[in-house]
Length: 112
Length: 110
Image (cartoon, rainbow over all chains, first blue to last red; front, side):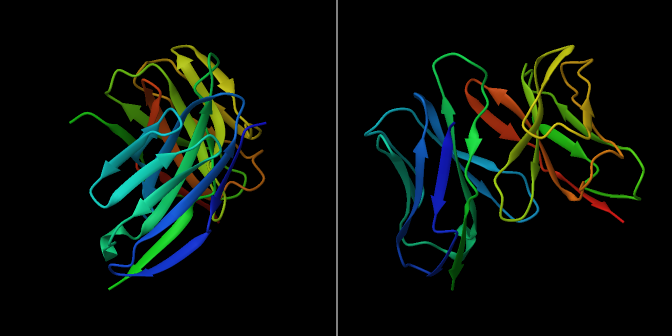
């Protein structure tokens, strides 16, 4: 059974204080690992897809990396508007239905 | 604008009543999904549909029903058999290998 564990559950940072969120996974053949941002009361917003170990993707202050067992979402010099819940999901492959397994998320609060 | 719409944003239901949540997309995506989100839990799959007139149960389908008569629409009915329906419901569709989500419907049972 595919499993995704995100840590920490909650993280409080001061504005400008860089940190990382972790997503550990076990999957029978990784098709893709996905990061989403979710604001309170809204649907998840797609951020990144990573496919293979060593891959990195960046968007503004966010950088996602992938190893064979985990992914990190690095947040550099965060701002209060980066406050949100960040969700990680993995999709097994090859073949089969596109049904990802989601983690429970990390709630990030950035204080001004 | 292309996207996924869900309505209503908030929904209140009395115990014993069925209620239908709407999900529409104009992205021409084949696959659509319904998830339930509870505080502190990951997204749990209720139903999914890969093509018109076909759908499959997810992990927590009991007490729910769906239809897929049109490519654009994938409504979810929460029946009176669902014991704890108060939750945030999310609809998604698939582009390539990535799911894109609607804004969600918050259902509260009074």
